[in-house]
Length: 632
Image (cartoon, rainbow, N blue to C red; front, side, top):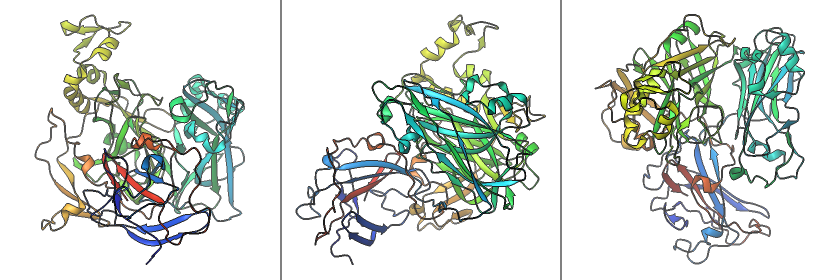
């Protein structure tokens, strides 16, 4: 069809020299290929799951790693012969994280005289002159919206200035801004008024009045291009109802990741959020619910482990009190961990039956965390329990990791956009109880009132400080028992309203892991072919298939391995459309270890006229999902 274009399905060996080898199963179809003076263009298609289990990775709604490389030299010899491609070590290569199966409508908003924009910008934030993190809080007052409007889109607005040298321009300011969260504040007070006239301050120094700012309006995280609400939903903005908004900006500065200047000086940032809103009201008011583990030192992740599970519970007692009788509908989620997070799942439990996960990412990238739309809204009823389940890989760390707000610490949170909005419940977290924490460390009792905290029993630990126990604990031999206790032990449910106060009746709740008697099961789409047992099978978009069946045993065994096969099955998220070009700035060496010197000067092929025998100089694209690699 395209005689001047050579196009092949290839793969690479994990420990090979980087040259892609021709697949025995050619599963990609070329749709278009041409070259002009500036570009080489290929358009192709493949099945989401080709069933080439040896060399192709299924394309799911997980965060997919796309690794690409290209060269300015022609292949030589027979195109199918090993060694015919230019040296991979000299090729230009990078990696991108993408939601390949999701295409959110990010087309420019149509011109509408009733649509307005608002820019909420930080003012001359002096960033630290060394590695570290900074949480900056700035208050904004909403004066000019005298009647209800709907927020319909938000995105980042970058204005980074350098007083040292132009190492980073505005296009790369996202390298420093890790996330920005806009909170709605309840009520009005002189303290909020004063804060709105100031340039801001570190969040830990902010007035306690910000505790009333507990409802999240918008959230942007590194790698995101912003978010557009569905056509029937908008977030309500009205100065008569809420006049003050707090923007929390988290700056993460790392010399190792971003080419930090050797002696940085006086770096000033003016980044912020740009909001699009309209007076044409939509059918539903949207709300945001935070679900997961409360950021706290009691969230402990042992070192040297490839598979550590943490769970944050939003218990049924809280959703029962807060949600309307007909429930709410989740339509988008943002799933957040920090550096060692590998998987995140939002689970839904109803009447001891675990339903299909609302969302699940088995290949998360902490640099690329943004709202992802669900193919269809998911209904959550009063009394449903929601669990944010996170899996971490701490194998590269020699010390424990604690929960917290900095990127060196860890988090396990899911922000869910839903409708209709309610204000009774905006934060639904859990925190391991102190008895659970000390029992997981082999401690029976602490010395009351001791400072520093000391251990009373068992006798062999008597007098030891809790800090010493955390540092010296034998995680290698005690990890499985620790994991069992933390997952099955008691926890404190934290159910907070928009006023940052506990919901009435939830102050003294004690929570435990649910007693699930029925659960879903996942069958790989390829392995499902030819099966005659179709009872109780739920087919979603002809891709992922689920079976609901009773559990044979409710209690988890001490040898916890129920999640070990997660890497070998498809994601449950449903395809929404074609791939879109949304990227993060993660490097190929971080994603795969394909290191190699880049050419000192790189000139893309095609600066002249097209060659008579055109080759695709995009040598290969790699879809990297966990430890499974496939190359095309």
